[in-house]
Image (cartoon, rainbow, N blue to C red; front, side, top):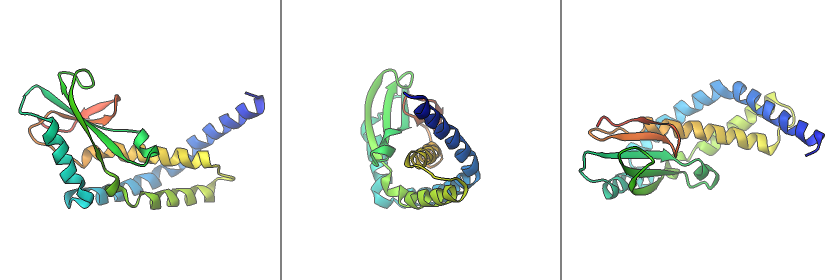
Length: 177
């Protein structure tokens, strides 16, 4: 790698940090709006997502008390635009001894995310000179990861040990089992 390209790469990384700082308030507002919409769509079963979710849970779980259920967003599903979440049942520790698993797509709940991307891009273009595609893509990825992380607030569970977070990443209890 030449000194010039290393300097450019470093500059892009530094700028993306500045861009994230600049957009943090805007992103928090967009997330609030989007999560409200996502909850409403999930509750009214838009795109059959709620039914699909209940079906996957029913197919992979049993009445065993020792089961631990993990729901994880898959970062790569943003890139592939499938917006899939992994649902796995484990005996004991999460991500160790899997019993069964399934996948659900929340794509029907994310209809207005593209509008958010346009709004974020426009805000960046007003503030930063010569945006490159990689910078915009990094901001989109960052926004989607934050939105995925908030899905744990969309699903409510009673009587089950259910954990939520990134796949093979940090998870937290969202069920009350």
